[in-house]
Image (tube, rainbow, N blue to C red):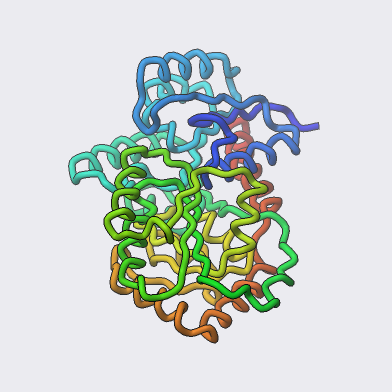
Length: 358
């Protein structure tokens, strides 16, 4: 039986409804299924910033991890907790899990971006293993000077395929149902989507925005934007929903739209393909890597005109929309599964520990 010697430090509850935490949950389950999981450490706080309570909680928890064990730290927590983690680098095998670099977050000024990137690369260079969720992020780290030998790419997966027979039926008469599933933060580009749809107010469509309003000020700004365009009857913000409710949104949608300014992968985008939905997105970050070509229409980052043109094309041309739907349905059968992703994650984590004891 395997030794339970791997700990996972999460920046908050693993039940948090975002793509990054979905990945973390499957990673933890993979470790648990193989008998390697020793424990989960959940540190609540205003990540990616850090306050005294967070640091104290993390310091106490990490101090209890036995010598020689492996500590996996989600990248959202690693850099803010660097002063707490660094003293343990000699006695623990510390592994970073990077969904995307904090310095690549949207809305940072040049000085803050440089500060975050410098802090991240400084701690990552001290680790023997950095797990990333895409080749795109791996290339980014190499460009910042990290050793290629220490980087492992473990892309996310999806749950088993759905029966997509309902997509073969004639869609109900009524407005085209657009769906966007993402946390309401500037990086996800909901403001760009609202601007693009305002240009298309002569078409019949409805947009459902599903996702946690983690940035309350941003969510309120989006509400004001919708009000200013007089689109409150067509753009509905639902907040975070239960898995059962989310399934209903996936099933009744005709088109998935997410014009992100950056993505380290884009779990919701791939989930849309699993549901047989055409995807309209940007070419930001790892999106071209994550979303299968037959299912997607990509536009340049922050190009509202190109986004409006792409949406108009799919609204006005049922044949083109059907072509992408069939492409998504075909691609869904071949998407990488979470079981494979979790198995690769366990190997990436445990082989660094094995090398350290050899």
